[in-house]
Image (cartoon, rainbow, N blue to C red; front, side, top):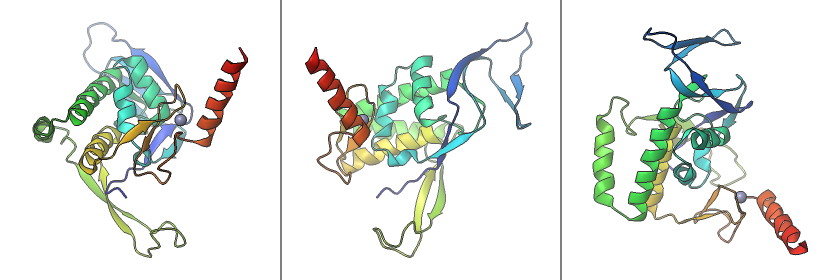
Amino acid sequence: MSLFHLDWFRCAGGYRIESFDKIGDEPGFWFVEMESGRTETGDFGLNIVANSEHWWPTRPLDLPGLYRQLADCEPNAEGALEFINRHGFLNNPKSYAEPVADAVSTILAMRELVDDIDDPDWQMIAQTLDGWGDTSSGGIGQLGIILETPPDLYRPPYSTRPTLKLRPANLGSALQVQALEDACLGINLRNCKSPECPEYLGSNSHRPQAEYCSQKCQRHHSYLKRKAAKK
Ligand SMILES: [Zn+2]
């Protein structure tokens, strides 16, 4: 069981790409008043925008190898939108918008990290981690602490005591932490067998022989195979 936990949110209405254009030579930021009365500002240029203020709670670190899904995304606005549509903003879950440029640099950083893990180049990873610690954001070293109350007394681990967990600062850092944890534990991941499904399955999953991420995916793949056989 992972040492880390992150509660996150995904916009129920999905997300879109929007360009906030600068008017004239005025320096500054765009400014939006939302339905709830909350105001938001941000950088000009391409942004990914939440379509509503309704949020679904998610637990991204429960998805095996989610960091690999991020690394698989194209490092452009469409790639970032695809990931954010599935898993929410990378930095601040309930914000109105996030700059495309930030999401793209998170995708590129993740690609580099995954390359170093697969190679593997531990020295390089360790050096990069030291570098992250110097950035103004605090890198991935910023961890909060949460107490997870006992979820269910009748299921493993049958404990009546809460569990102490570390909470990464945001989804972007959580995925870097997930990548490093998998690398250190030697977790092998495989793709879901259904074509076009971006999900991964972990070697530590409770279904070690599973080929599909879900029954839905398995049924969809059988359907595709039946349809192909009829042609
Ligand atoms: Zn799948």
